[in-house]
Image (cartoon, rainbow, N blue to C red; front, top):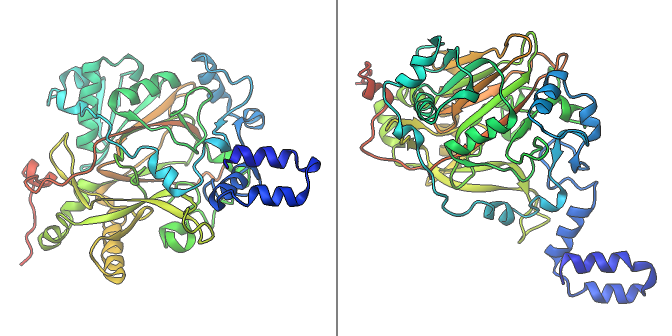
Length: 442
């Protein structure tokens, strides 16, 4: 008997004998009964992430009431219908209950074209059209001025993909970027990620809404003291918001490639984001550590939790997938250290103690080396927004919640899924490829 049958029985429970109801549901499997309860009981939060509401579905009228005016103008100008509310929250019937359901969503090969491989290595079409191109740090981060993303040609999009792959993250201020154009860019660079749980722009699945203020209105407990706890111990303290160092969607069969976040409501002060380079993190390691890690694999987990169909009362369980810890980026051919504190669980083949010691050291390499990081303030001129476009394959990032919600911060994010991660033993590190000095330990 399916959950539909269960629903039919429960709807008619006043007109049937209780013994008949018990007998009828006796043949319904336990996992079907649990799935029905999870999908239909608003007070059950299995299918939602930590500290986020469980009773929302569809467009939210209350959200529209405090949506920043700059965000409203951007939506209306692009013809997005927000008359019924904002954002649009996936219905509970669409959200996986069991971990095997979540795992199966994209558990198949998806064709992927590495657009950067079509690009002119000199990027003349892109850089030649810009007013200014400025590297924000030596190892990561470039800002381009004088270009509107909405006007890019395919040739420029290919060259931008290559620049993102090389520099980790590229920034564009003072943008007039329609949500639909942002989504189209994402589809050009890869397979669009449509998340089964994350709220999105109404009518635009895959155009995820980044808006901590919204979750705070619905009970997210984030404050000045707890917003960074996860960076001390994410297992013990969890993650509130996006303040823990992480890489998006590492649990996917084909994890995130290019991600594009556009902020259309930006605090006057604060709300910055930090990125760190995986290329540079790898080159920070000793030559012996590099040899040890090359070819090793790790288990990566999802941000969201689900139930185990075989052990539904055993607690929440995350989607897990195994990928190389050092992966080769096809656009550059460079090795990158592919781990992150938020979602790397363990190293395959090591004891838990060995794995924890090595992983915590690798996390620290990313997080404690300021010379491989860039901190970016999103401020644009009034009436404009700012875009950051980064390569999740070769970076980590985290936000800084120092504005504490006193001023609105709202944006939309589109993620393009890339290739199945691989390690090419003949690939080189970034410093090797660029001819930069590499210290050899004796």
